[in-house]
Image 1 (cartoon, one colour):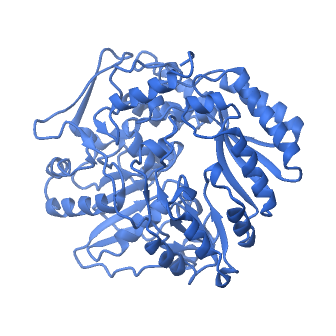
Image 2: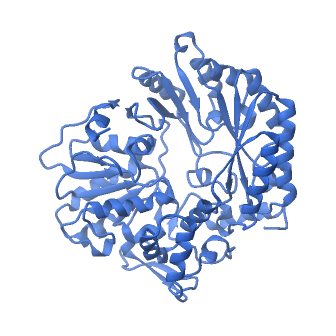
Image 3: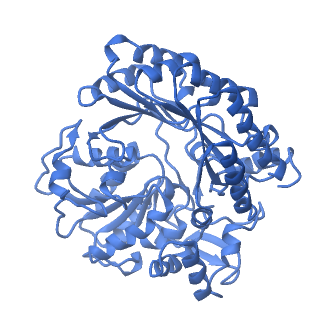
Length: 539
């Protein structure tokens, strides 16, 4: 389908402003296809904020389609939600005939900015490709960025960057210098190159009680015709590996007074509603929300939920979901081992898993999907066997319920207690073990490719020395073998892939993102790591 037809099929839930004659010319891109990008709630919300501003003329850019792009734009922005999409950003820069490296851009080039969860967590591997990076929630940060840029529009590029660096949450990588003990050694220092530049950049947190909702509904989204409502942001459970919890603290919920009219607004354009959040069912008024959605006038609604906490899978919830067209539900259990769940701070008893499965079946659901993980720090072969044993028991207790396990490999993430711990190489063997054993039980096992997990770990813990490697590896493809080949070409110029991916790092060392302040200090994260270590001798 051509671009015009795709964009004409959209239903907008806001009014696009007529740009003023002197409006900022902005290209706002998503480094993936239209169907993927338009399904990103964060991308939708930022685009709508820009499009509603008469002081902005914004055009959208995807890897497969684009709106009519302005000549000589002021700003070019990207939302990065998945690490491996970074290569598409470089490709789009090339298509726009812009220098890949921020240091090579001149006054006639737009400022290239980026945001999204990947860049907020650890932007360092990509830092030299961006002029400005927005760290944190976009609700207030985006407007502050635009206001600051307008005040220096028309001045020299360096003046613009120096001024933008003064805005909380705006990170200008070129104004920070990283030094190393040696080319292949640890980071020695990260410091601002001018005394007028802040030493640390603080991630910005939106603290309102009205969270994000869809601004566009389209049949060409990855989730067809869905209207998304963010019910909660962050998660109160704080599993020690979880970026979605730690990086987005504190836990916030949208008030019922804002949720109900938001859902009603969505139902004017579609019958499909998606409730989003890392732990939707832990909304403090979740029961009242279920009562509202259970009313007869919503009988035609098709309702879907993001992952919910296991002990909130009640007969009331599963019955409502069945009535509203949902056939399965997803819960995150991580592992069948109660001991290992204590290590990662997963507050979940095995009996609660059995009860959730029983409630799913009694409520009329056809399937139950589980999220699991291998390679968790402190994991033993016995813990992996416990996962097999759990599913064997579930098969007996809930016959007829379709059971699925999506399984990833532990990947260390910045700003979490496990950021200092590397990927366990034995995880690959354990994925194969689960595939074999669960296959015998008739469980639908869906593992994330081990190689992809290693690349994610590289990018999640990387520093600026990776920039040239990331630019080069595109010549060979995105496979793990391509990365290993490229590391050989850069031997002696940066640490080994082993260092970034598999090595445990000392808690007192300099981390690549230490100048970027998240919700919790390293001292607090270290204490949380120590609590995990009290439950095992293998961390």
